[in-house]
Image 1 (tube, rainbow, N blue to C red):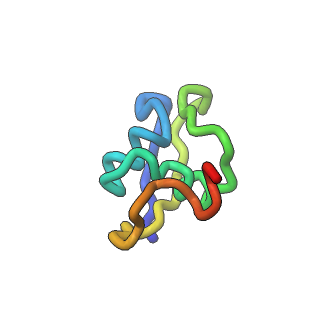
Image 2: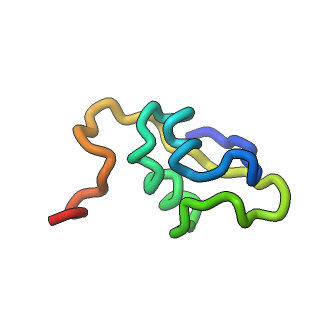
Amino acid sequence: MQDIIVSAADISLFHVAARELGDASQWWRIAQVNGMTDPDLGKIPETVVLKVPSVERDLVSGLPDGAGS
């Protein structure tokens, strides 16, 4: 797991996940480790440090287990 600095300019966790994990649909993994539910970063006042989980190449989908069923 690594720490990164994000701001409202990063737009959303979708963008961060695409850049950091190579898969925008894995935004929920970043949200989960940071206690977030909203992927929108446009509401953060300044910069914040987020933890980003390691890339998991074994995931066949960006969706958490049980999502969409």
